[in-house]
Length: 156
Image (tube, rainbow, N blue to C red; front, side, top):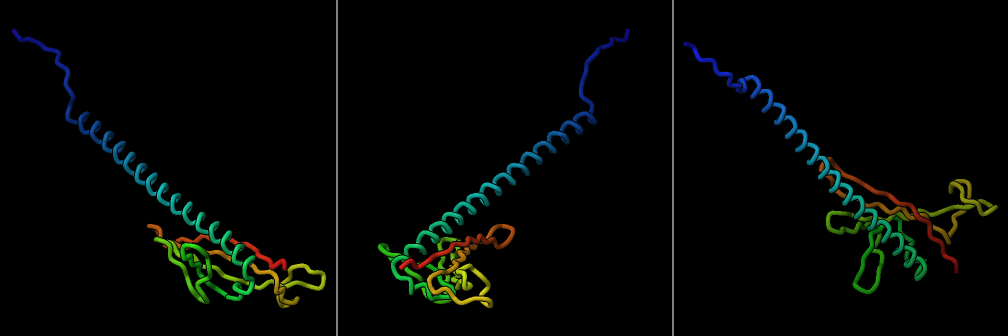
C-alpha cells in the first residue's frame, strides 16, 4: 500500500525568488541610507558656510564703523587675534577648518541724483562699498561655494 503524505515544502525556485526580493529591499535600504547620510553631511556643511558668511557680514560692518579706510582693498580675508577682528590684507584668503573665506570689496558709483549706477555713468561714492563674501569648501562631488552680498556705508 502506498502512503500519501501531504508535506508542503518550498521549492528551490520559490527560495531563489524570496532571497532575491529580500536582497533588493536590503540594497535599496542601504542606498537610501547612504544618500540620506550624504544629504545630512552636505546640509551641515552648508549651515557652517552660512554661519561663516553671516559672521563675516557682522565683522565687516564693525570694521567699517571703526576705521572706514581699512576697506580700501579689493580682496581680503579676516583675522581674529582673540580680542579684535581685522582684515588680513590684499589678495588674502582666510582658512577655517575645511572652509575658505574671502571678501571682495567693490566701489559703488552714484549719479547726480545720488542713485546707484554703473561706474561708467557716475562718480565713485567714497562712503559706500559693496562687499561680496565668498565661502568655499570641498564636497564629495566637487567644489562648493556660497556667496553673500552686503553693503556698508561710512556715515561720518
